[in-house]
Image: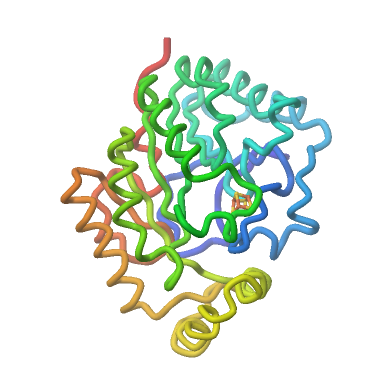
Length: 287
Ligand code: SF4
């Protein structure tokens, strides 16, 4: 069963609408140092295919109601470099189109542009993650650059596909000072909605982070591991700090006329959109 009901560890902090999740690939080649999926999926940065994925999906899709929301993907990127050649995500999209599902894409890759033809024929929206314009090579060594992602947002918006930006994760001392600039650039490229989430390290992502940014890690270690709180194997910054950060972004989004939500922070009162994951962007369009 590759298409699964989305229920992230039954987290009380998750306010996502009811939806299904599909990861067309196991693992992810982007190698983000902050990635949490590497803590529970073996050999995570070796991106590989799933046996009989399309056959399995064709069987499963008949069992869920038409117009269901499908999130693609939550624990990997649906557009790793091998997708260019294999076109597995593209085949999944064709199945979703045939069965009239609503699809929310979450990616860091410009390969999504190849599928504009399909996305235009479906109820769909695309969110791209941008964390930093300065430290992206250290943070996301093998992912397409944030500038390519900004171009991707622009092209998608230009084609009439609703787009959102994920500022995820926000890392103190690294990208918190870049947020304003990223928001302005996103707005200029037609983005409608912003999703923000703070860094919630697990042990392995913290190890990677500390190797790459030893001084910043040392500076903020106590904030996470002594003053913060642990929820489901992730360490959170203290609530007052996260709230201050999230509120600041919400206010800036208000000024820029962008809708806003935060992801798994526990401040739903700061959201001003119909969904926290950007799925409200999915319109009724389907030709
Ligand atoms: S793109 Fe997402 S799934 Fe892939 S390595 Fe980065 S954080 Fe992990």
